[in-house]
Length: 310
Image (cartoon, rainbow, N blue to C red):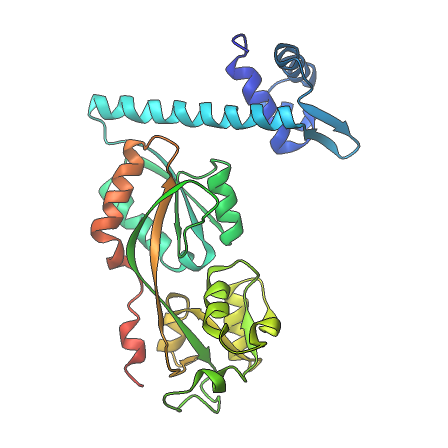
């Protein structure tokens, strides 16, 4: 194993990411035979096949997955070394891959812009996905830091809360309950709900909210793939939605949606900045974390005034 090279590791990462040797070769700027040689040399060194050759492409074996995981860790460590060297030189530079759950896309760009204005030499990349995708990106070391409402439990993480995350129930302005006060949990449970996919943070919170009502979570509502689709469906009169107040601030302010006055609402959660606890923290990661702890809440949508009409 001591004879493996970075070129070999990059080759198997490219094969994994693109499925075929010919595709990996294009990405690496090499010929397919050159990539094949890199793979064969590494397989000989490991003593096991790293990929199963199938009609659909190259699929990593158990040994292949182990080597790929090591390759990702090595690549990550080299990035950290580069950042540390810059820090030693006194250069406020580095790179940061930020992952955010889709609900956070309503404020993450503004937060990034403020951070990059203060630290223009830190190169940032933004990756948006649902909760499952963001957790997978943390597992696979595809992001350095993530913003989410409920930290994952199956990944070793360090999590720090940086702001409030209120969850509310919204309806179209002409809904029969739009002007009602102190709507009971039992009454709101009679409504048709538009919900996110299983495992999403808002859906988990809604399941907890309705958990004491027998049978209600067995048929929670109509599932939709994004907050934008849910908002449009609510405005069209297809139902009500339990959703992050940060995602509906503009629609409520423009009277396209209303927040229903439900007893026990809003549910107060928090936004967390998370990073893996089993990896070293780069200067760029530490700087972004400190920025969020001091100023992150400033860039969350102001939702307090949304309740002023109730």
